[in-house]
Amino acid sequence: MKIKKGDKVIVIAGKEKGKTSVVARAIPTRNKVILEGLNTMKRHIKPKKQGDKGGIIDKAMPIDVSNVKLADKKS
Image 1 (cartoon, one colour):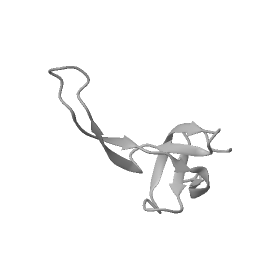
Image 2 (image 1 turned 135 degrees about the vertical axis):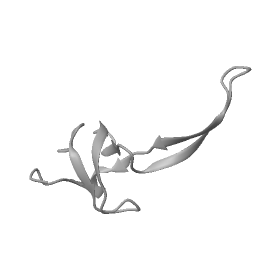
Image 3 (image 1 turned 180 degrees about the horizontal axis):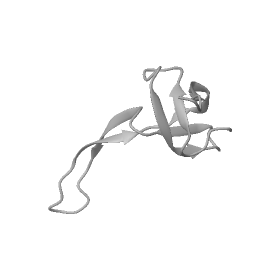
Image 4 (image 1 turned 30 degrees about the vertical axis):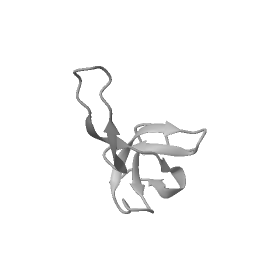
């Protein structure tokens, strides 16, 4: 896998096609990457203890490496 954490990439397939982001985390064993601010899903969180609040948070989901490519270093 040539893409590493901190690389600037362009999404070439999927609902985020054409957008640019930075790799927040690379998962080479599964050939996936997590991008900052892209491919987020809503997740419902239960309260952990009595008195805590539950809620809905945005969680970054992995995207396959084949759906991203490295951005040009000049841009």
